[in-house]
Length: 226
Image (cartoon, rainbow, N blue to C red; front, top):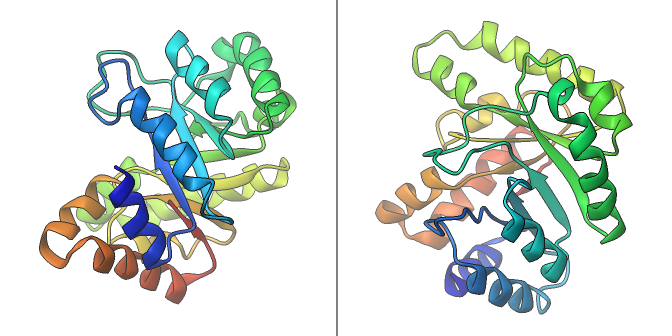
């Protein structure tokens, strides 16, 4: 884990994202702590921890590590992967106090949201700094060539979120083929690339894979990359 972060940073990545889950299949709690300590030696590189605050161990980890950004994701303990964003009508009261605590820790708070949400102003009212658009529907549309209609929906969501005072991140199933097209949307601040980057690294090497993604971003607009 440390070596992967080192290679990413040396290749130009601006931030490192981890998603600890209760079964620890992505990363162990000890890895998160070790990685946090290691990143203190890399000024300007942010640490983003994402996960579901319903898991007590997740919030304990965030309190101990105090990341630059905490992305809250409503994935259940049995979820194979994140597959939907928050419904703030149902979760607003609970998230309100959690977001306040995270901001008191010094973390920027991002909420994982669906592009068809209409809750951007509510997200800002409860203290979120950013939202992360869940991009699997875009990736599926790109693969089926029904791209422009879906991309327009994401562009409208990004504009609505920005108009509510939120920064906009994006993530899930973005890859070298669909990323540049997505980043035609103005004002995307950060994208998180996970599975696709690792898959590409098997072919081109880890550092070269990171550089390939940064090149796509550089030719589309200005972004941070996790």
